[in-house]
Amino acid sequence: TEFHNQHTENLPPKIKRLLKIIFPELNAVGELALGNDDFHYSNEAEWKNEKRICSPEYCETYFQLNVPLDSISEREFLEILELTNEKEKFKNCLLELQGKKRSDGFSKLSVLLNLISNRAKTQTLKNKSEDLIRCLLFEIDELSEEIEPVGFARMQRNYETIALIIIQLLNNLEEQQRFNLLLQLSADKLSIVTLARTINALQWEHDGNQQNTTISPEELNRLKGIIVASIRAMAENGELLNTVPDLYLILLLWKSWASVDEMKSWVDRIIVDDDNLVMFLRKNLGLGWNSVQGGVYRIDYGYISEILDIPQTAERLERLNYEENLTGLHKVAARIITNLNKSPRKDSFPITEVRSI
Image (cartoon, rainbow, N blue to C red; front, side, top):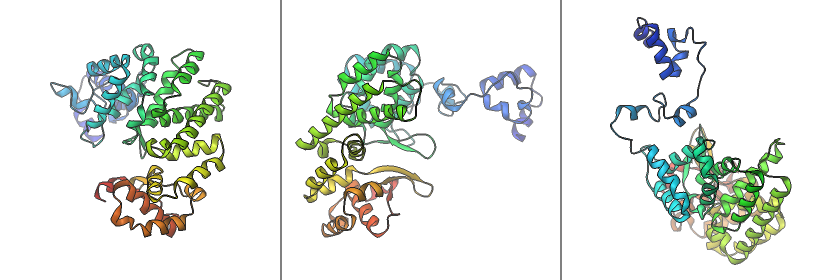
């Protein structure tokens, strides 16, 4: 406040008013906060969406001669949208963006997803909604391993963000068109996680008694049945363990939408093999956050103790000498299980330490 008062005290009223328009936060600072009834607060997401100079994301861009490497220009964004006419090219573009790391350690894919989400209701995106949904549900689970920051103290995998974007885009379509489109796309097993996440988010609309839901209860139940049938088929042919990136989510939905006994029977069969056990644990790593460690990998104790004998599993892992023979996330999962055997409260491992083990 002292800084702003010192530098704005003698400014003409018109200049003060202009500053408040360019930098809305000045409405709440010192002398400039007075007489601001003509203004209302925007928020950082809106400033970012509008690419305003007051957005921390774009401020430096205004003082450079080109678009920062960490950003996506308007021209690049529109060129990416044009790729929705060719699903394979669009998917490859997303994979390429995922490989381009920003200075903060995350990828340019997160920038693109934020742009799409923030602009979902614009006419440009409304015109592209169906094509974009088809692309976002085309073999998209390949993107799910990357973790991105989402707001304060929250992390999530890309398919979670994509699922929420799909629902935004679905609501740009006519009601019957929404269900028919999802019905057509529900057979893509290489997008089973993103599809399941999307349908589960649609379930939340109904569970929360939302007045205007994206699809009807009957349509929702039909889609859930199709996903369960796909899960069963993938369980039988081995794809469920070997190709599904987030087994935790899929097994929770199998349990919720079908039968816990059916799900547990499959788990009991596959974990007889030691390699399958290690893979199973690794595929059940979830994401969490705590104030000490920040982002963490974790395994849900209540969930895992319902389907595994924790002491017996920990003993098997010790016999496998997991600390010497396993690496990366496989070791992380094994370490969490052995820690859970000692204390149910030791259920996480810092994401930042994964590269060092």
